[in-house]
Image (cartoon, rainbow, N blue to C red; front, side):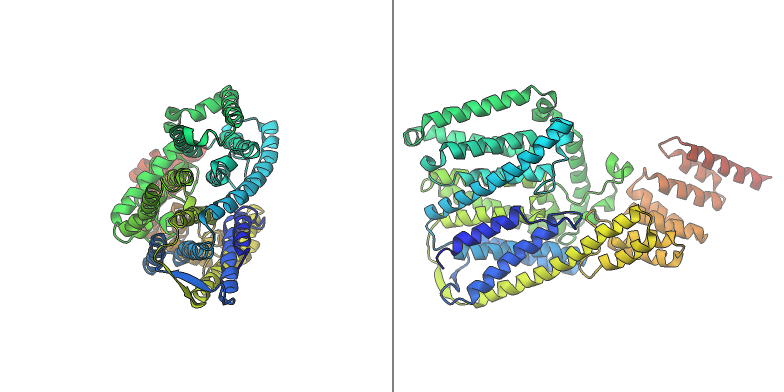
Length: 597
């Protein structure tokens, strides 16, 4: 239908950028999951009910087949995943990716590639401007109050929830802004917008986006230099000079800040806390891959399975109760969750996209280099961060893939008039929405439950935990089972048997959470089941050898069993010297002396 393409892309961008819910702990994750799946559902039904628009192209393009293979493999992994609810949710993201690709590829095929580039570049600029305006407003307030330090930038959470996500999304829009012909792209409003995007990216100080931005600048500069005789007459030199001077002045100004200079230093990054933590997480993921190299642990299950081989070596995980929910490397995470086949399929997406761009570089030299810079940027994000976690990033990635496929133009595909595929897609999206609604309600009640916990309202915690948990929502956003909070509340209310049942259920969801193991051991100690307590505590300390609560409990258990030397040895392993440690030692010595008298 005429005009459908514009509505399709406009609403898609609105769902990616403007949808959020303040009821949730994470304002953007589940709210955008719901909105984007509803978007595909509504348009699929609309197309299915209109005979003129109910068509699709066969055979499926190569990228669609690769996405379908990934969705099918992820679906299969549900059968061996420990946390089925997480496997279902993360599988549905890949189902959405395939369905969105199918929708966009078929409905945008009526446009010429040049017309599609013009339309998408216009929309991208509009939403880039919205993001720049909103982020600039909040950024100005943060800089006034806290300065320009990297730590201050973590207060910037508007639109995407984290400074790195804001910066990465702005970057992915940058190549799309210039998709129209160079003569139309290099005009002062577009260049000013691009400079604003680059300025915000530099100010936010996300190093991974710096790397992507450097690759973008290198690719575009090399292209423009090689083709300078072709485009130099089409573009006002004044705009080029102003842009170059603007970038240079901005960079020089920012380099006056010592903190910013450190952020740009590659060698300082390799020694930074974030780089060290990422390397720790990657190191801990490797044994999981070795143990499950063929099929993986199931989609979405990395976050509860990766501590299986211990978290020793990571200070924040061992001593500061920090839980990592992503591997900060999508390739490693996919290999851990879907095995070697999942990794090969994910690599195939990038490999085929790059291969196709290479083949089309002579037909569409400008657009192919822009899309190349975007794909390389997404590849960099996938190696160091987790763009596949967020549906808005998957959506932009799918847009890139559809554009690459549309560059090829009409081939041997035949147009089939049928509404059945669209009804199937609508049915799949309805299933996704059902999951999204349950998880939305679950997270909303989880947020209320955590408020009750902080207020010491233990009865409220139990009541809200019961509401928060459902068939498709068992973990909070930090990968802690809802039953863990319920168990703590029941324990505080003196209902120890019910608390034990809750901790056992929590353990079935997250068997390598050392806090759950310690709580099970505490209940066993209170019932004088010392051997059982020792088993729980031995496992907890295998996972985290620096876990002080576990060491105190194990020392107590050993002392109660008369193993005073072992109890003192366990106590000596506690890294911090405190009054509690001195008191424990004194009590153990009293028990030993009393027994020897």
